[in-house]
Image 1: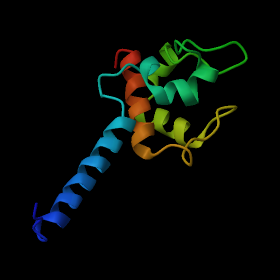
Image 2: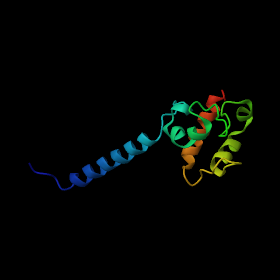
Image 3: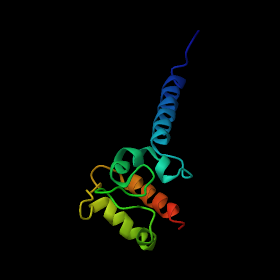
Length: 112
C-alpha cells in the first residue's frame, strides 16, 4: 500500500488536534454538572466544605447559605483565588477557568 507523502503530515496533525481537544474536554466537567458532582470540588473543596457543600465543623462554611447567595460573583471569585481567613488561595493551583466554573456552580447551588 502506497502512502501519499502530503497526506501523512495532515493525518498526524488531525490526530493531534483530536487528542488535545479530547484531553481538554475530559478535564472540564459539563456545564450542567452540579458542584458536589464536580471532580475538582471533590478533590480540592470537599475536605473542608463537606461532600454536600453544607460545611464542616472546624472546617469551611456551608456553600449553601444566605451569606454565600448574597455574595457577588466577583467576591466568590476573589475568595477562591486569593483565599480568606483559613481558606487557602487557589490562584496557583487552579486555572481561572476552573475557578470560574466552581463559582458558577456555587451560584447555581444557591439558586442564582
